[in-house]
Length: 196
Image (cartoon, rainbow, N blue to C red; front, side, top):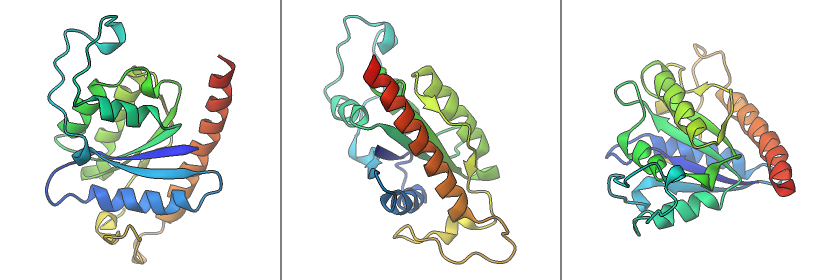
């Protein structure tokens, strides 16, 4: 499985990149997984302004600045989107990037790790709806960073420091279970796509 881990925020002082490295560290230890961080800071794109949805535009002219992003997304078999919650939704930069996407992610599984108020639960729900419109396969696993202070318990290298006894749920086990499920779906969907 070639896994893209998308950092869904570009703001200064973000915590999302640490959390994405946490996912990368776990995914890189799995057999049969090649994981890569994708930072939206490396893919600056103008606001989406095509005359219609790319899915229905037979004469689509893609902005050259968006082409590297689309090529990168196409290269993966599965995705983990790591996103904060801004104003009860996902960051505008992530929504804009996904507005350019069409068939590049269809029939490929995607998971979401969210953080923020209530663990970023509303951002996670919104993102899964957006991904399903692009015909990706969002997994039902809910992986918010809800434990008190957990977002701050991941260091700059993506290592989870020891959590206090007030956090009985093991976040590393929850992450691994999500990645195992993503790998299962990725293998199954890759086999199905090969038959098309």
